[in-house]
Length: 615
Image 1 (tube, one colour):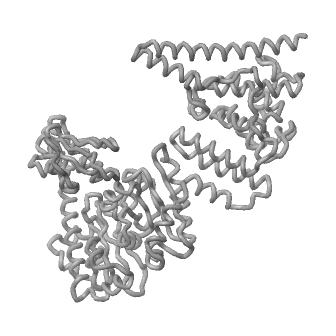
Image 2 (cartoon, one colour; image 1 turned 90 degrees about the vertical axis):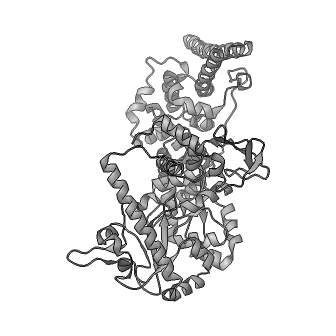
Image 3 (cartoon, helix red, strand yellow; image 1 turned 60 degrees about the vertical axis):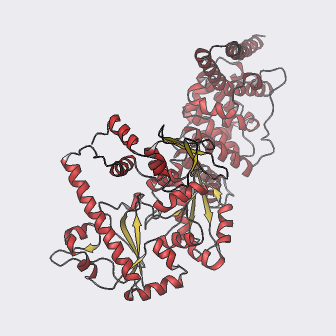
């Protein structure tokens, strides 16, 4: 299928945007346009405008902007191709022809969708008829109103092996088996999969029934039974109630994930409509992505038992891989032994709302889990904690986020194993210190972001060598040193040294040698401390410790300053080329002058130290 620009333009031209949006948003005429309170964020004064002549909507509050197709993907949550198909059908346009295999697959899917909708309708009729008395009693016991049961399309499957099969016989047994409604057994007649169960339709983002969940009426196993995987239903990519929760999530600014569909239904009745659930499996990466597509703020709220706790931990670890700026994940801890359904029933909606307000951010949750995993009263246990945290951080794909998590966990480790000697001192007066207020360049956060490509490799090697020779300088500079860790061999050595500083009250050369040997870095470290070829005098063995410590501090400041200063110069140069002005030129000149001063300072340090050695 090929969607040409001409086809999409014609589709937009045939779609009355105000009519499309007015299906779910109350619009008011405002001259040649329409206005409303924005459906993408909470507001009391209308700032959302729809212009039919230009064919776009725009919100002056949150900057939401788009055309008819964008409305269907962003507000309705449809995949692009599904949005185009729905608009084309409404506009009376034929979609471009598919290849034969795709057309056959689409026709097959259409038949399955129709079978599932008919099954949902049949189950619903059984629930509200004579056969559904026991199922209605269960709903009443669980506090589910008739209105909510109808809104979620709930139904009842009679305890029979063939009633559904007979009701839908027009589709044929093979299609009903493929849809997961019948169970096919070799050399036997297929029979109804769901029997004697409260039925809950599972829908896709377009609100079409694609599967069912069934809860047993009375005693029996399994308590819950879901449809098998089918051409319509992929458990790992589906979230229950996402079709209803998306719109609510845009209004509340959050999406909540719980363990089961009965939790979703109970919370919806209590006024929490932005709730979804996985379907009998652990939360997958695909499901986490669906959460963040619905809202930048996702909250995991699993049961208060040990199984729920393990599920929260697994989901949190998976979420790390795709966490990035703008995405937030928090975890709610329920009282032990309670699930959301029971909490609402026993303690009321206000208690659940209080728990949501106290949700733990992802970093806090992971930190508390790892710190509480075992007593930290031995060096081995503390090393294990550092290793676990390091492995968690390494799973984060987004570089800036990974570095921020690494820095955050290091700060917490520093505070957890606080040492009196680990105070960060200011550089000596009269020595170089980056004048960030004049340069308007960002501080250490940007330095960390740029270190992979901006660190001076020679200075980095010699700094690591100096720290091996003068380990007492590590604790007094630990905060700035944390910013310099990268993926190079020197970065690994530096990370091992900082880990050691968090475990040992006093670092000396034998301790440092043990730390590096344990980390498998002994040979690499020995190369760094050889005097031959070293450019800066502070690395040479016959300097006094106080002088070496001062020079090391100077080198750390310079090393951290260089990448950010280089980036500031690149940005100033780009601005000067794009928008030449006196101010832009002056800023570039000032930044270049600062870099020259930094390089001169480093050169002077080398010369001065060489002269002292010659005396």
